[in-house]
Image (cartoon, rainbow, N blue to C red; front, side, top):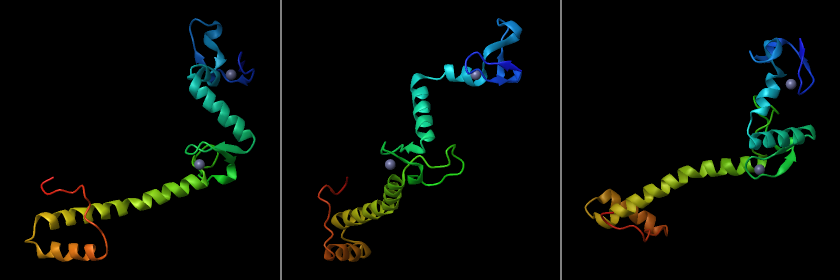
Length: 148
Ligand SMILES: [Zn+2]
Ligand SMILES: [Zn+2]
């Protein structure tokens, strides 16, 4: 066992990096402290902020940046504080956006169809479908041009 010069905790030698230049063949500070010292300032700052909030039962949302109680974050077992990094509200907006994606695809399909309608009058199926859209008030997008 050996006492770390940095955190003062007594740890087994295996918790210290081996080092030929140091007395006893090991670095005077433990692996945790060593790793900590070699982290970037930004990463240290984030870690300290997280720890500080966690001790108060709080967490900062990775999406909106707001600080809430842990209860405002959905449960996620495998994360270290047991919660997701997005708050419920951001999670909800994200889910909403995800569910909107097929709608964009549908819109694209509709635009393609209307484009064929503008450019090709020989396809009856296209004409029938496009007429339906036009009757429903869906306009041909103005930026659509034949041959584009
Ligand atoms: Zn230490
Ligand atoms: Zn949020």
